Image 1 (cartoon, helix red, strand yellow):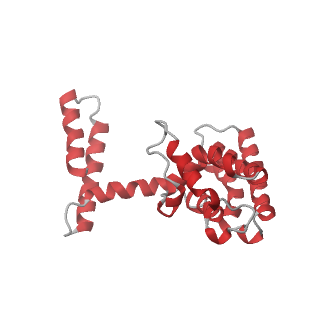
Image 2: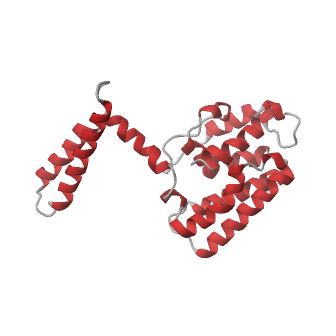
Image 3: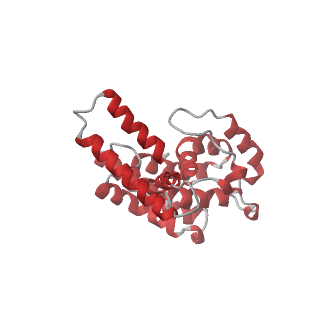
Length: 220
């Protein structure tokens, strides 16, 4: 979430499209209208919750939008506008991260992903300058090891906790006693979830439906 989405993806999008870099070889700001038009013409699949947002509105991108842009939309967009050496460099990042977010990853794939990300890191200094080898760029080198130790990136990313913020927000119904509302609602959810597990075999359809509706009524 922070290393790739809010880190490297956002960093390089700003490098590519920020007008202060208009004199740089990698600058794509001249094509911002064309890029936006191309993004708007893309129809998202059922795998993604929302269609792509235009790059001129990148300041409002959420972390998951950056990840979706990287994995789903960046290659067809950048291929059209980027110089060859910059596009080939970007594909290293896409290839590496695409592998590390898969549900099932072979050892050989982790090795290949590591090679891609190391080559991407080395290429940043060559193509963009040493000052752009940021902490997040360096951290890419450690993601394959994280996958080896903990599994695919999505299983131990900050996205899990961010998603729960919305659940917590739904627990609050008024401005008074917010912390008590959250604790009471969460305890109720835990009790009902536990009840559903313990009594699963003994509940008929109506009883199970009632408990599920209680959860929805009180917590959403």
